Image (cartoon, rainbow, N blue to C red; front, side, top):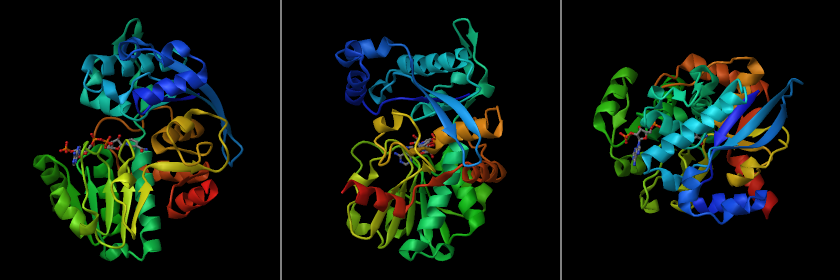
Length: 347
Ligand code: NDP
């Protein structure tokens, strides 16, 4: 059985979902009540691959909301409690979605293995970042040519280049062969180390990189209040919005600047679940975060281990392995035509 640990994108959204699911005490509850609420196993789902193989899974809502990010103890408790619930349900492999993997890493939860009487078994969990990185690379490679961008000559900016997903994307794109990688993050030292392992790439400030880039891969959560001068962007420009939350399209509205929701895949048939409705997917019955899909893929493939774990460990070989499984089991990366198709369907 696979598991997915997720959360709502805001307290208001969490309240609305609680009302919809028939939990009025949560829907009307104050923030403090949400802070102490336990995780919920919300939904079970059966997933069938085009190969005919069928697997079972469960979605666990950690009852975390981003408003809790500054409350370190609360955030930590939410993630650990959700992991404990997954393990107690004997789920073999569970993906840490949304902010939960970032909380796990940044608050160093590796040191918090004991949760009450449960010793967490790390091998049962994955960040899902290997599949996310692979999907984002596919989104670049498949969609840039559709806009007339020749990757072999293109400048590709990676915002969040020194991160777990960003560094894997840089390694993959370098091997793929792009004109030049533009490396962006706040701290210089990790970028210098990345540049030295890549043996190439130019370190730039965000605004400098945006002015030069034909393709921009965003794999950092955008700071609140960020504004982008659309006039300074190149035309055409392909932007892959791989951060969380996915709000880039509201910042860059300009003709010939094309934003794709990054790290999102579409399954080959409808999934009988409600949960992606909450994540505001264009086609919630089929579309999901690539990190969640990684748990499904590991279950399909019988790889019951923490496939994506720690920081900056993602190898090209593991990206290829999960990428092959992704195609075999009916996932494909969201691209320009899928976005446009969904918009047309909605019209
Ligand atoms: P990491 O913490 O490993 O990396 C984050 C990177 O972003 C670092 O390079 C960091 O460097 C940089 N960064 C952070 N803030 C800023 C900023 N304001 N401006 C420029 N750079 C910044 O995170 P992950 O690689 O695990 O995840 C990256 C993003 O991807 C997150 O937003 C996460 O939520 C999202 N994600 C999306 C998924 C999906 O959609 N399917 C799945 C998993 C994750 P520095 O601190 O030096 O700035």
